[in-house]
Length: 232
Image (cartoon, rainbow, N blue to C red; front, side):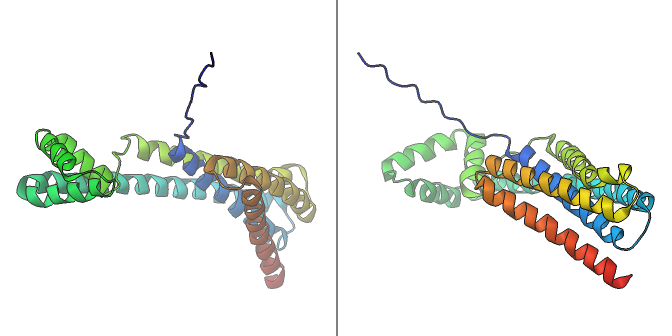
């Protein structure tokens, strides 16, 4: 007697958290790295690089965190606005909403009799009707009430952690150019690892993601260093 193999579906459910970490960490690694590279080509003091880099990380984390907060709040406000509109329409325009329900389920191959049965059930439960329209007509899910706060915190912390990596060598190396060489190696390795992990979580090719992330960060630093050298 053969046993049926139990099917366990494994779905990734922390997409919002990962997205916020990716946003914060990618900019945190790239922007301070480019700034430090640019300053290394223009100044002779690592203290100045650390001061400017620290100020950039502080300002950048606040700006990025605030941007994440406002984006999440915008999503919440949009959802509430559309929710009120759908609630009003099933009362004022029920025939129109019934037709939209029919269109939704026709796409899934349901027969008219089945669709009418569903519509009759929904009419007895307006909240479920509205929820169905929000999900299937508008593609909107109810936002987590703590989403805005969590997003701001996650992006800001990720930016700080990412930004400290390219600055660490300058704490121990007095010469800016020497510090830049070590910073470049450390940061490019961090970018490669981060890109690989990001690819694993987002479902894209980890190696491709690693390569792209590393190239973008390297190019940004190279351009900043070249411009600083040219100007100075």
